[in-house]
Structures are given as C-alpha cells and as structure tokens.
Amino acid sequence: MAVNLFNIAGELEQAVRQSNEYIMLKQAYAEVNADPSAKAMFDNFRHIQMQLQQKQMMGQDISEAEVQQAQQSVALVQQNPKISKLMEAEQRMSMLIAELNKIIMKPLEELYGPLG
Image (cartoon, rainbow, N blue to C red):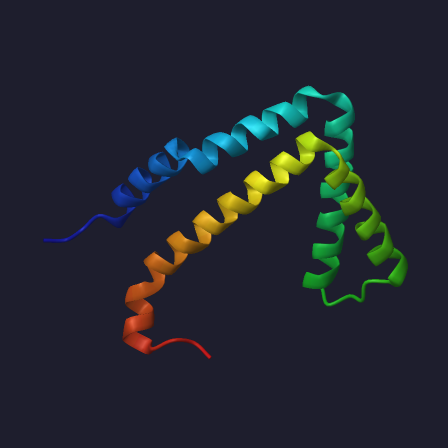
C-alpha cells in the first residue's frame, strides 16, 4: 500500500497551525503589529538580520560596524516586552520544527547513518 506523503504533509501543516506554539507565535506577532512603535522596531531588526544573512550567503565579509549595529538592534528589541515575547515564541516554534525535521529525517539517517 503506497502512502501519499503529500496528504500526510497537509495533515502535519494543519496540526502545526493548531499547535500551542503556532497559536502563541501568531498572537505575539499580532500584538507587535498592533503597536506602531514595536512594529517599526521589529521591522528594522528583521531588515538588519536579513541583510546580514544575505551577505553571509554570498560569502561577503560582515564589517565590525554591521556587527555592532546588529547587536544594538537586538538589545533594543529585547527591551520591548511585545517583541521579546514574539522572539521567545519564534524560538519555541523553531525548536518544534527542528524536532519534526529530526523525525522526518530519521529513515534516511537509519539508512545512511548519522552525518559527521
């Protein structure tokens, strides 16, 4: 009997949407977006983060000034309780996805052995 992995993936998507981690993330994101000051601060933080990630992916060096700017941005957003709550919810969601990925990749790991 063949298993339709896409149907199961769709069910997993719905389960993720119904998870406490996703619900809390969605609520925290809505709270940040409802506060113009927090939204602007968070958008700026994400912009800096994306710029640095792009540079890394392109193999470009990140300057000391850019590192300092990123550190200042992190410190600033962490002082905002709404953004801090959102970042904590993002971290929990990321941990959930990492655990799901481990489960999904288990058959390949068993077949080929662990990487490294």
